Amino acid sequence: MSDDDDALEISANDAKGATIALAEALSAAEGQLRRTRAALSRLEDGQARGTDAELLLGADSGGARHFLDGEAVHAGDILLLLTVDGWLGVRYEWSFDPESEPVAYASLPGAFAGTQVAFRIPEGARLARRSRQSTD
Image 1: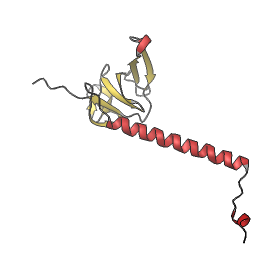
Image 2 (image 1 turned 180 degrees about the horizontal axis):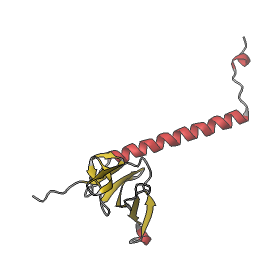
Image 3 (image 1 turned 45 degrees about the vertical axis):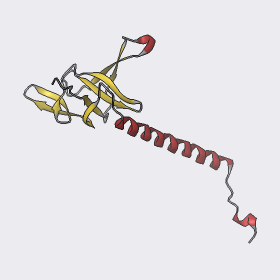
Image 4 (image 1 turned 180 degrees about the vertical axis):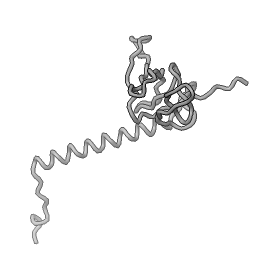
């Protein structure tokens, strides 16, 4: 058996496909690592309390309502949305129509400071409430 018999032959297309698959796997792993780091990081004055959770649709005496970690969420509540860069403070709004999706409003930084953008809160998004500040 010669050294040539042990060589692995790979076509250019196979090598390109393997390179793309590896790059995608690395990108996914990097995204997961960034999300994990973000979940572990805490903001000095807006620290998330409890664990991050998903919004769940339920009902209370007022009718249909979203709940976060067992607590009712009210229109105008400030929540923290977990992103790959950390926690983003957003204002929660919802029409109370079970067929509609909740919306988050976030303020843009920098030159656009004061401008708010609205976006649908993605299904499965991880949210938390700001920690309650002690008044003692």
